[in-house]
Length: 137
Image 1 (cartoon, rainbow, N blue to C red):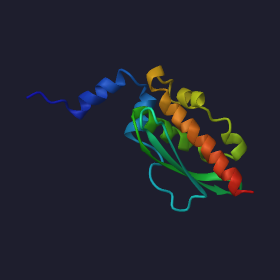
Image 2: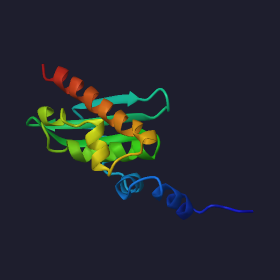
Image 3: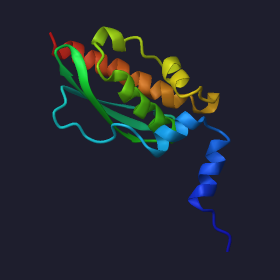
Image 4: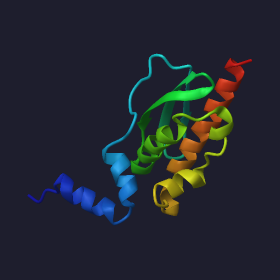
């Protein structure tokens, strides 16, 4: 019986994805729940079924901490991970500049077939901004 080791599977992935994507996929930053969150949102992609739950804690007008839970493909997980790094320390005005394109660029560029992972993370930014803006009113 022929079996593929996990090393072989990652070898296949490395032919498709940048090292940055694989690093964030293998070692996601800020994964998990955030019990002290100021805002928690959930977005999904109805086409592929990926789901991203994003939580953020605001302190003095800046995002002090962001965490995520993601059920999805390699790029959705990698994009969620890099997104949390881009959110930390920023104001609402600053996070408005985060787009699917900037997230893709931060990961070395995503293949068109997997760009939906960056779009899911960008959708999460929009939902987070709406949530935080309505909470501050």
